[in-house]
Image (cartoon, rainbow, N blue to C red):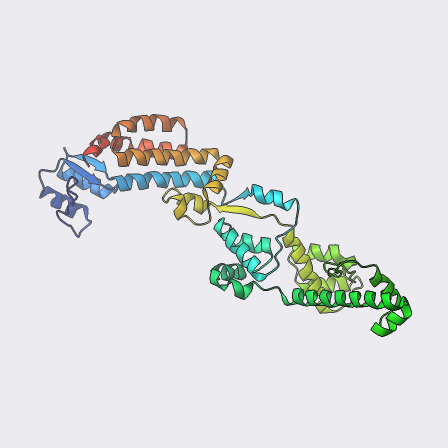
Length: 368
């Protein structure tokens, strides 16, 4: 038992039996207001021990009761997973298929950026074409490790070295030709073909890697549509191999697995980055502020509400009710009841109808 004016503990009863609570309450004959939770047992015990006392529900249990009804309403209104588009990303997707990075550090920073924007691990993994485990690990890497990861990949470094060496050879060929003006002499000195000498003489600037991103024909190309279809339907590579062998494929297993990996990567690249908001996340916002809830931002919340306007009304109802409770401006309660019922939200109206008598007693809240 707590004094509702001083908030000091007066007594403590270990039993929750109705008879025990009734007899215990009778030892306090001067009770005029009893604030309690919604339990039937406490109501009955209070009725028997103090029939003339005002019984009111405490703010915590009333608010919990309302949010429970609101939770049921959100379950009715919202899908389990709500897809919302990222306007910025939709624009990006028109110009390039996927995010490209030069170093591993670029990839790590992109993971951190997307996590900061509240994208889920699975969404980041699909967009970047990496595993969910990698997303988790990259997000944990501290900023002080930049130097460790901010190095070009080995194949890129090798490519740069090749280009540098080739450019040096081209310049030497050009210098040598200026001396003798004979293709055959230059070709013998550098052990290259006469046609290569002619080609090098026309080059005026350092070449880039000509083979980069070049597409080569594969003996699997004629089975590509079948491979994609079976892969999308969940067939293993072994079953795919058996199917295309029946159609004439005679290549190796490793070639097929490599080809499949390429197809899977291409399919990942074509996916647009999008937010998925869980219904459980939206329900959490009934109890917590948005900056305390994972995987959602104010912008994401607003987009969900624009898709489900009635859900937005529920959050407003909860917000207004909390303001009445904690400001103790009980005179606004009747207006809240009137305007809220006009919204015709079945679950909230059920809450109002079941608790109307308690509301009338809540005129005493300004003393609580």
